[in-house]
Image (cartoon, helix red, strand yellow):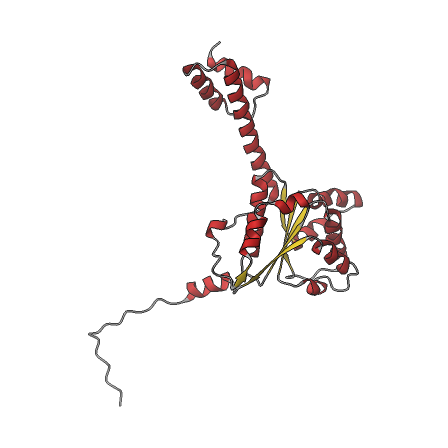
Length: 265
């Protein structure tokens, strides 16, 4: 049977993830090197598994909505005055995910909290976990627009189900009591089962300023802080630093031949 027909038959039998060209190349290589049928089957299985893993990763990455972010090899660890880099490197091993622990990235605006959270999310995706990234404001707005209890419950699963949920920017916009109850519902359902990363500029005792008057704030903090790894960042804003560098006018060269102007009388 010609190789083209073999490739078509294999795809018809279920090898749909692997590109036809890749199957043809594998068959040609096996024929040239006189591989045994068992070796050919092993190579086909490995090819299909690899292609399915790549497609699965692409699908989970799209669903995660991490957005564009700076990779860790471009993160300037010398910029913060204080940051527990060793703890963050331990978190990259993702043991906190297997244990259902949470992570808190805390510091002023513009110091890299979101970037570090996105890199943890990317590492989790690469290891087969499901991830969802959202700001607190976007998640609450998404839930509030649901028009019925069943619709709300279905949408709630978007934030409850992932192995890792990243909630960005807690502390920048105040939320009403209904919003606080929704966020508490998410954290409570995830507590002790799957992991949540939160970025914030506030200490736990200040979370009541984000959810003023909400009775659930104490319980919310209690559940999230239970088995939580805090990474505090003391630094000036990177954005302000880059903005000042951009605005600084270039130095003008001095011309030694220029003669001083005579004073006006």
